[in-house]
Image 1 (tube, helix red, strand yellow):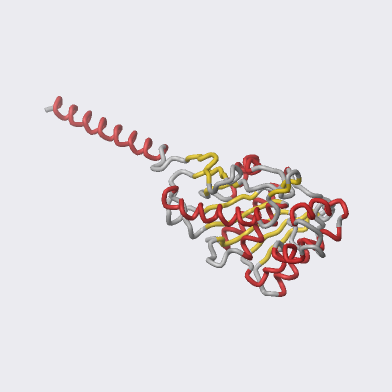
Image 2 (image 1 turned 45 degrees about the horizontal axis):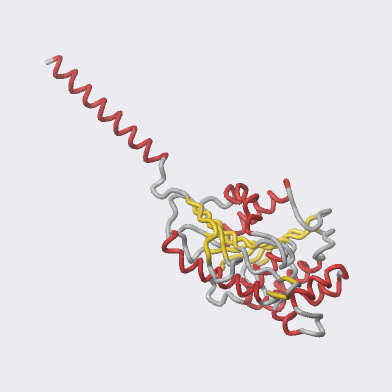
Length: 287
């Protein structure tokens, strides 16, 4: 009887040990592993590509999405701008999928891809993302957008002007051009670039300046958080201040941080703090 009792105990211990190992293994290995999809094509132009960073254990119902649009004066830059920020974004937006997009760049020789090419590409990218949500196991109902400089301009323009279906729930923009005609007049050094991307001066092509300026679409704005250095000599801080005033006048949700002694571009602790603020803002407006 003692032998039988010992054998029974041994079997129970082995069973419990095996069960414990299985539970530990299940806990360590997600049901759906994380995945990175590079250079996913969303259009016919070679620049119409995106990198998709999918979190583990994602779901169509609840996995939120952040679309990042790079800067570069609409004429340079790349989706890899997101790469250096991913670790911090993942910390403050846990469980999100992150998507960095390229778009057509304006070129002078030969002249190609002036406005509204970039605006069209952002809209095309968003449509493509929505079409892939079921396949990628991410939610089409929890999409946000972030952009810096020219990318901030494009993020705001899409979110205010081309978002009638309310796909984008909240937007964050760093030092964005918001009023192109005023920007043209304010900084002589930027005139050539603005003329390049618009195809002329404000007097030559007033419709393009109007249609490409987020400040004219604040009546349909979504919750926005804006960051701008008060010594920016590329995009004057007034560009953000004017937009904030317009949003407040129309009763729209807006948060802003005018950062003392910072120019065009952020890094280090200040950049981390902006991402912390984005995390809080998005948690409130993309629940």
